[in-house]
Image (cartoon, rainbow, N blue to C red):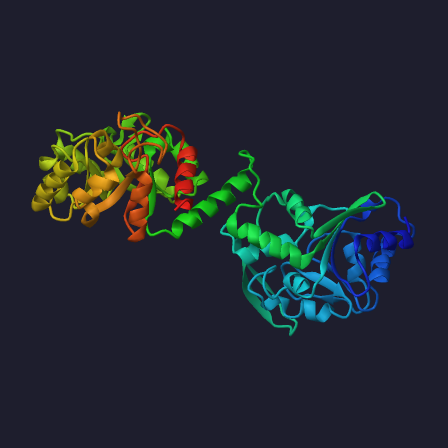
Length: 479
């Protein structure tokens, strides 16, 4: 390879006089080059001419071609301590100006987005999309929730020491190489060969337009689907958590659905971006039957992973009310879900414990449930209802069209159990039975419901937590 051959290869890909180009490169990928690395940079400058500008990322150890550009007389180094670039040519000053003042290292008002504004191109010489720093810019512009905030102390161009935070900074592994087909299909990337190197030339503005549109619809578009990739699993969980955080309701999962053992439950919740659990069963046993020290240890383990206990759920009304009161005091649980029928004596004892009480309808009609709730509220004002649509279905009612409206539960509901079943009581996926779960979720969201939605609350789910969470997200997306 020589300077002339390299220049011809660049022209054949579309590089021309006056081009502004951001180069990511591997010198070794070319093969043997006469007179070494400097000839590669000279070839680029031959092609773009005096009116063109060559820019390279200048952070870290990025290879000999970067060092060649940095050594050019009059080269401009951007002032940001992160995402730094070196630029050479008439547009260098404008591309690099006040990089350090930007809110992000790669997003708005940085050399990467200015390149697109000026109609520039990105050249990947012997490297793939994993080296394409402009993809960090796309993530930053989308403000993707898995990105982080970092702080750096550095000297400004005016020689003043400052400490500054940069938002939406990239983290671990993403599947950038999987974006090749999107850029090719959009007609904004050409692929050719120079020597041994595969070379990609990408229209920068087209890259942003294409990927911003994709990312707005699919914020996980740069994450791989490998279940063993911890980085992408955690980043996808951050996306889930962010979407839940935009809702008015609070989301929890029954511990029975989340797993058998506490560490398993924690891991499964974290994978789905859910940070609350309703304690109904642990290790196959009703939680209210566990010794206080064992239940408290589980609660502390959850708290250590920033997982909130939304409530203790009683699977039956126990005979010994004082035992439940003692358990609640020992564990400092502030909310309890109790079966509706036969709970009168227990409610008075729970009221003395100062906990929030929610009555869950059993397999009974809406009129029966409404009557029981009214009676309970006369004894203990402030009691709410946990609306279980599966139980109303088992009672032969349409939970949304009839039960919810007939019982006038809109005034007293504080929890919706996300559970579904057929008329004969067979558990199903959400919105695949007769419990009208989708309609109930929709109407509560319309009223900015601030209570709890509990996946698998009060009923088994025919699958794993991962399947239930995906089922639930798909329901939300369909509304």
